[in-house]
Length: 166
Length: 166
Image (cartoon, rainbow over all chains, first blue to last red; front, side):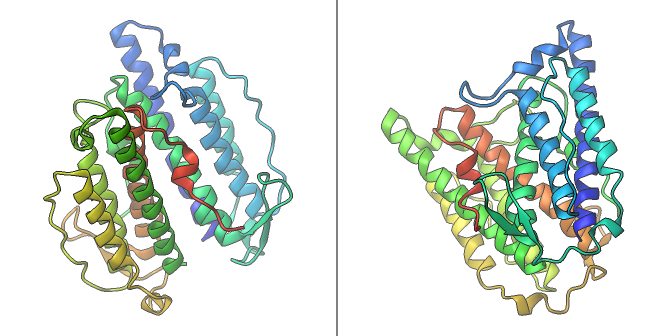
C-alpha cells in the first residue's frame, strides 16, 4: 500500500505539471508574463503559488523517503519562474520514480517515522501517511490548482484527477 | 487500512465543520448574512461552496459504503443555508461513525467496487480508494476551505489538518 500511495502522488504531480503547462499556454494566449502566477495567492495572508508547488513536492518526497527509511534529498527553494517550478516538480518525480515496492517491504503500519515538527516527535507509518502526508500533499496541490483556476486558467477537476485506471 | 481511511475522512469532516463554524463567527462579526457563502466560488465556471460541501460528504459516504459492500444512504441536495450544510456534514458523520473495522474485514485490495461513472464500470478497491475517492474527497474539502479563506474567513492550514495524533 505504501508504494501505491507514492505512485499516486507521482501520478497527481504529473497531472499538476500538465495543469501548469495549461497556465503557460493561457498566459501566452492572453499575452501576459506567466511568472505573474508565481506570487499569486487566494488571500493576502496565504502562501503564494510558488510555495504551494514546493511544499506539495516536499510532502511527496518526504513521504517516500521516510516510509522507506531513507534520507530525502534537499531541493533548494530558489524558483522564481514557472518553468523553474516545473523543474522542481520534475526533480521530485525523478526521485519518486526511483522507488520500488521492495523499498517498502520492511515498512509496516507500526513502523516508527520521525517527523520534523514538533521536533523530536515520531508517528506510526500509517498515521504519518493517512493523517499527515496525504492531507498535506493534497492541500497544497489543490490550492495551487485553485490559485490558477481563480486567475482564469481553463482547467477543471478532470485535469487534477487525471485518467483513472479502470 | 480501509477503515482507517474512513476514520480519517470523518476526522477531516469534523475539521471542516469547525472551519464552517469560523465562517459563521466571521459573518456575525462583520455583520453580513453568512449564507452569502453558499453561492461563493473561486471562478465563474466552478461549483459554489454549497456543492463543494455536498460532494466531499458524498465521496466519503460512498467510499465507506462501497468498500464495505453496502448501499449508501441518499442525502438530498437541498441545502440553502450554511446551517443546513452543517447538517449535511453531521448526517455524513453519523453514517461514517456506524462503520467498524469489522465492516471491512472481507475487503481486500483486489475487491471489485462498482462505480457510477462511467456507467457499468468497476475498479479494484485499492485503486478506487487511492486514485478516485481520496483525491476527490480532498479536492472538494480544500476547495471549500479555499473559498472561505479567499472570502476573508480567518483560517489556516492547521484548521484543515487538525490535531494530528503523535
